[in-house]
Image (cartoon, rainbow, N blue to C red; front, side, top):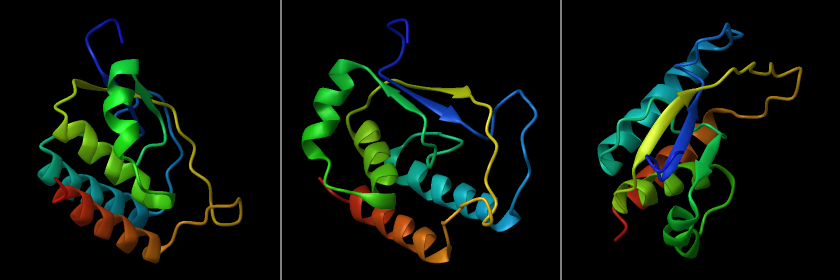
Length: 126
């Protein structure tokens, strides 16, 4: 982080390495969720739903006391708190190999709707 960033997101979409291609509708849902999250958080992320995030100690001190989510609500909530606290955010490309349903992928359309609800919920929270 070299003192330049408070938070670093690992993006599956800007990686420079070859990656496994899966499920158009999951990709589209991720892009839509990221778009709406960016609108309400005033950020410009490429992959809000990434599981790879690094935080400075100071950033965690601002975010952790306000977290209330579990499951898929955690990603939008963290991102909203990052935006509302005007933390310095960087993105780095990551190598990623998505799983098929046979390999254990469990995300479905209901999870996408829940994530959208959480974006709205936390986007308008003070």
